[in-house]
Amino acid sequence: MINVCLASDNNYAKYLGVTLASILVNAKAEDELCFYILDGGIEEDNKNKILSLKQIKNCEINFIKIDESLFEDYKKVKTHSYITLATYYRLKLSELLPFVDKIIYFDCDIVVNSSLDELFNADLNNYAIGGVSDINGKKVKENPLYINAGMIVFNLEYIRKNNIEEEFLDYAKENFDKIETGDQEIINEVLKNGRIKILNDTWNVQSANFISRSSYIKSPNVIHFICGCKPWHFGSFSCHKFLWFKYLELTPWKLREEEKNYWYKKNRIMSILYYLKKRPFFFLRPRFYKAFYYTYIYPLISRTKG
Image 1 (cartoon, one colour):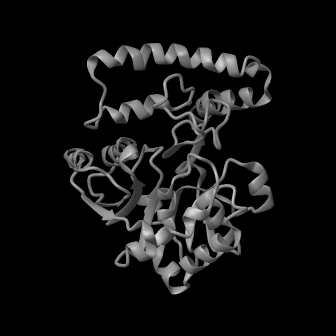
Image 2: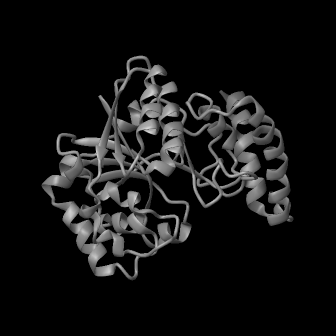
């Protein structure tokens, strides 16, 4: 059984649905999937829409109602406005899911393009978590084990045995007025003493635009739409946003026919205009040519050699 966890309030139910649909449609026939949805107030109508995704592939979907009183101390942490209380739910997974020993956690701004079998079976013996290096080079230079928290494989059995949830809470209490990146900072600071296993980049390619990506892998297994401008924002110039809309079409929230021109044609044009306005001299940046080479040229060379 492949265990997967996502957390959402009602506002993010649609985006959670897209992530879930992308996992189901790309699963192997033999993959058995069990989803745990940390429910921060999802309304019944949206729950039914999420449950309807079983039509893509049969699976288990469990809603875990969250008692927010468990997170009173985390409410004191003041970081970015887009970091909601739901992001801290993952810090209590071993308590919320006492019967689960290992689980993949995904943020809701993610799409998955392959089976999760290999990721779930990553060897985490003697590690609390497995994750992918963050796109922030400065953070990684300071701490080579610094990971992006949008995708984490949690070894919940290890976390319980070593009382790591208490360490998370203690760190939050002691540093509530200094924490800059919410749960991500808490996880990385507490576990930086060798309890994080770095996984292959393809399991969390953090993508903001064509140039700003954590990896230039052409077909990532997992795409994480970082930054404030998500694919569902009109005019977003996210490099992989067409995939998000592809998976949206598999959900009850799919576009109506009269909306497609707006989101497929006008949106594409506006994305280019916004990008040119924000980055008018993108072609002068060495990273543009690096991105172009590794996205388009290198795969062709590799296939030729193969």
